[in-house]
Amino acid sequence: MNVERNEAMPAPAKMKPPSQLQIWLRAVRVPALIGTIIPVLLGGGLALIDRGFEGWTFLAVMIAVMLVQAGSNLFNDYFDYHKGADDETSLTQANPLRKGWLKASHVYLGGWICYLAAALVGYYIVSIGDWLMLLFGVIGLLLGYLYTGTRFALAYHGLGELSVFIVMGPLIVLGTYYAMVKILYGHVILNALPFGLLAAAVVHAKNLRDLEHDRQIGKRTLATFLGERKAKWEFYLLLLLSYLTMIGIWLLGYTPLSSLLVLITLPLAWKTVTMVAKSSDPMELNIGLGLAVLLQLLFGILNVFGIFLYYFLQL
Image (spheres, one colour):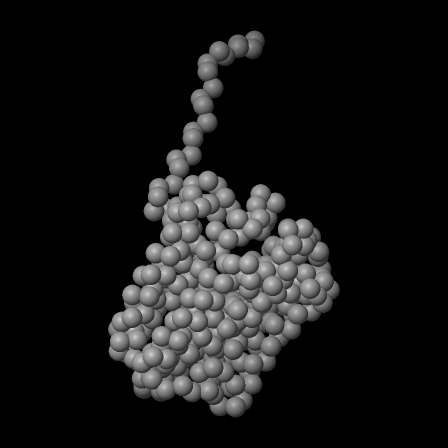
């Protein structure tokens, strides 16, 4: 015998809205800042090997670089939102601006606050160094802002990969090293190239995923210039060059054998290539982008670990 129950069904629990702190942490993309820390650690490790490491200077550079990146992320969201590159059809994870948690003016102001804080820390770095550190800082601020800002935004004119390569490779690594050692060495730039190439590959993977979307909104990237087939080959080339460069600078004696720990990531690199090669579907290419990000992080972490491992084994 069935008995009907007239008990009211419990209402679904409402999700508690995030706090302002959580919203701003998401807006500056805290997890993405890890990728910015790696080249700072690489520059610090090279300074350690050359007996020029200074703890307080290194910490100041780390803070300044993270503030610049946080500000650049806020500017990136602001300008992409207003230019239509970050809308509901985009596969990019929805940020607080798109969700309506923050006003556009607040995001823009937040970017300038981060830049101002970075400039204050930079003033300390320049005061204990020289004018060349000012040049490093100004270039970093300009490239961060101009990446998506103004009519001549670098990311909208096929220069996104080059900009990221410069910043995440030679600029941060050499800038970190020079802040402590006060000398410019070619081997530091060479050691910066592999991670810079991988950072560029990540940006290119994103542009490859967004190729059709970018064409529709008039955003010109290398992927839209080259077309899908050639753009994929460029992605493969960037990955290949990152490994070949690492092996090359080791053969030349400019990096220790322990840096070749990065070769452990070769299976992941191959998996990333096959994922990108087999599909034109943006959803599947999004998985390829995720693998590229993971590859960049693991490669960078192993590279830094290899540098520090060499230093401690030499003691």
